[in-house]
Image (cartoon, rainbow, N blue to C red):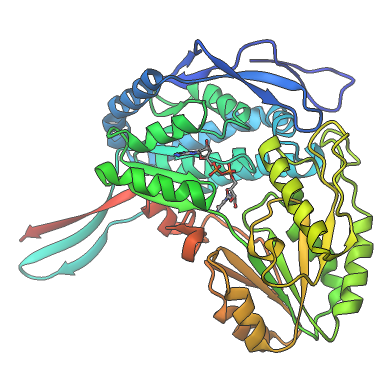
Length: 486
Ligand code: NAD
């Protein structure tokens, strides 16, 4: 992959003529078959990515297995040093990566693509500073008992298409730091950035430490079936997460599953709603709603519902949907035709059921690209599809509520349990409600705060295990108990 920097262009121009290659055992690898990767803003074919065969996957797994003992034998600080140098190399390519991210994923180049790439690099550097010290459980005259964290071996990383850079590197950094090696597979819809960061790793990491393969869903399934993989770190939908867990049981692979959400935000009657509407809007519609922790049900107290809805719609009207490469664009297209088709179906249901739609509601299918307008649904029933399902698009139901018990029961009436938020000036009341929400994360008067030391994961069917934090790091290890007689 070569990149040409044009003096006059604001962003690096990417030459898609050179073939994208997988990274196996530190070397570039092509495949006999390739698949098309589309620009979601235009439907044009952006590039072709290699379609790994099962043999190539097995070669990658074997390379990761060969590399793992020597990698684990390095000191923690040596591995941290490799990660810091890898972060520097990604940093040197961040402009190109951000442009590529917009071209393949659709998100705005000047805002979300830039911040995703920068945050990912920051994350690697910060993860590299973490330590998992042994714990002394007993130290008596007779013996010492210690619990130490040891690597699992080879980890299979499987990622979705909404945040391909961040969610991939969230797996790579803790996996390698703890002494494991990795085979990473991006979504077939957004493989290019991941292939690029595999390429960049070739000059930094020992061969076999980080292997990147691309292909379809079959490739993911082969990974979960393969006895050469000790853990699957998976981010994606609940339906696929269930398959991953079932197949991974063949050799009792460890699994971390980061799955879908249907997050509730609850606005109390005393909320300073004019002040918080922009925050709530972006928390629901950022990345065009293609976000596991997007607000997907916005509960607003009946006392302020009408005014809130009018203000929210007025704010939403100011937002521009368009090509992510256009600096005026606030929200890009839907990333792929599969998801666009799901939204078409959901929009048809909203129309057929006759719900009130004060903004948006009609997708213009004659336009090139997967563009969906910002859409707000006014108080649909709790039984409606738009309330019960995860739309994963720029469409939000706003729902009226009256009592705390009622809103908590409605917010919890779902098999999802990823995150939730409560907003109001009565902080004690807001915290009491937040404590009753059945989700892995709750925010009060703030939202979408993440940190390397903050564990993140879903309750109920939104996942199993966590990423980030010391707990997330520990999920890439086995506990080994040492007992030494004195
Ligand atoms: P998806 O489940 O369709 O695909 C995710 C990945 O799994 C892709 O790489 C895909 O190729 C692979 N895959 C598909 N079938 C497989 C199988 N049988 N075995 C192994 N791998 C397989 O999800 P998606 O549509 O790419 O992503 C959207 C979903 O991801 C949404 O539900 C969203 O909420 C969720 N998500 C969750 C988080 C989180 O941290 N909780 C973050 C981002 C996205």
